Length: 412
Picture 1: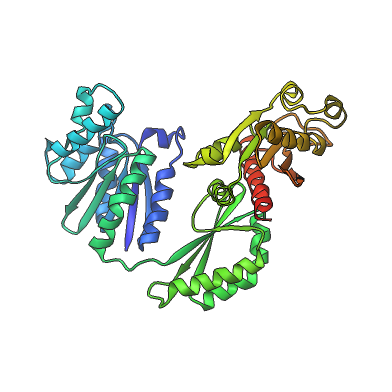
Picture 2: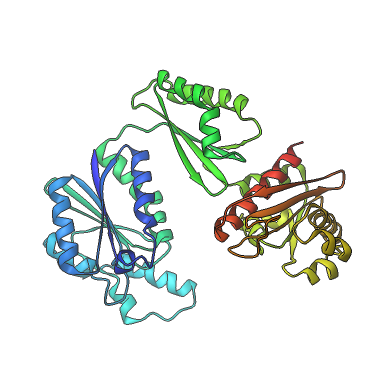
């Protein structure tokens, strides 16, 4: 079944905020067996919103709209929905109670604007927002169903995963979509595609399809079975076993997960601990590690040695080595790794030093040059990476590559 996604917000149209909601929703709907045929972005304007919703009702049976449900004056979606679906705003006690609970939990005073958020179109089916004050709403008129969701990404995603998904599957009696995601690291997408060409060609014979979903440092491979394929799960996992033999070092997980979660699982399983010493990544590796619940069981801390004086005074890096080889070198990064591991008394350590950019590069060490070292009591390994000219991507990719080197050492 075809659907449309409508995003509301001036901030989206002027490029102030990236429209990540639409792409995420389209991916989710595909998982459920719904095909997004159109994505529309409209301004915080009643006529623009109304025209987009009316057009959607003429094109498809089902549409999702995000945004325009907050407490401020530019959040006008509910008024337009009342007009289209012949309804009046009415205080919903369940929504109000949810708002009170959220404000009480945050020790905040409830305002009149917040109370007005509990006023919803009287004929809407409410989808509870566990993360915020604006509820999700479902409207039906003739053969058209519209779902209105808040624009805040984490609120929207919570409603979709916990309530909307089952509503859609039940309403449209959708067949289950059988798919699996494989996580790959340490190989460029073009090289990976070349390496997997024969394996990928064989997938079509098995009625499977493959999608490459790259992000900085990581490639997600999503394998999907054709609708109605008998033993789809079994066929997919047999193909994954074949894939493991082709890229054994690069495949780091089955299932849509993160490198930092995989690292945490490995450390917990082996009852090992970790510390980090970061220069060009500025604490991003520590951020990734501590974003995993329970990371305090294995992660002790970090030294952000951005300035060379911290490398010498705190991490005891030899000053002559700094002068002779530079901060971005094998000699320095290995000392950073060994010494932070000893200082924080951990089983493993990561150290990173590089030139994130956009300036600071030389002919010998251009922007994007990064040295990474991994240390344990038994060994130390180090590797030079040549990344891009983009500072943000360099920080992310360096962090992911560092975690991947650690993963391989832990496994060995």
